[in-house]
Length: 378
Image (cartoon, rainbow, N blue to C red; front, side, top):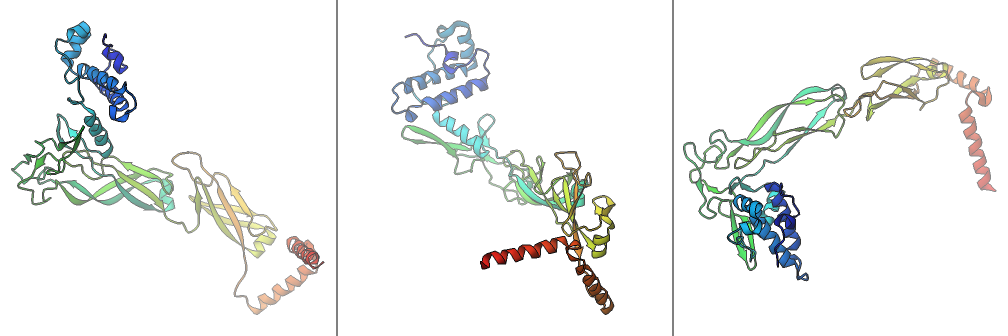
């Protein structure tokens, strides 16, 4: 039976890159491996076919010969075509996948594992004015940094780590369990690929030390509670030459004495005297960048909300300025003198003599309550 074209087997064009060839093989190997398809008799043949195609196309010399002369150009049969071993078996696929997930992986050329440093979080508390206007803030962050005494190697200055004899410097060992060959982190060197016989006295062989870094954080105008600022590479130092993690600065806006914020809008409560609420007048109202005069109409009731357009703030997501909502709170006088109390009593009698026209809400409420009790008494 004639063999299928290797590019056709992997579903690729002849211009496919080495990375594309590897990805296509991984996908087919995972799909057709016999242990995942115990009831499909054709799975083993498809797995072998994909493996054979990969072992030819991943080898530059064999691929060149195959591209020129086809199957006849391969004088010797593909390595390992009859079995499941070989340079890139099913266990290696698992190893690559797990390495991508957990941040480890074999170094370039099959060397020791490198590990990306951990990401860090920092809570930055700001007052409302700073969050709205933006600023550059200095913070102190405790973190793990590369040891300067040993340049992160963990070995005493003037010495170098020795290759691990257990894994031969690979950082990983292969465990054979029946049909499967599983690759695991070396238990002797913990994936480093090296053993430190004479550790650095400053970091005790860890390659990293605890240190507090002082950083400047540029806070953009309009940040709000819960926003995060990412500082790339300012997290913990990596291990074995791995890249550092990132620092995420989470914004926490402190409660304000006057304003409450809802996105781009602000709200506040404005105390107004009985006289101003009754007769009307102007009240000085604070905003985030100054004062404005609020005209209070005569007869304004407590709880009335006035909307001042464009007197709110902007956000990092929208440059438009929000509004300010001012809620009137009519203030009841306290600590009155006898004379003031007498005047207020006379005023109350005068208002009552006018019936409901001076207190329409109170009069309507009394009538509503009266009807309610008349109804339940029937």
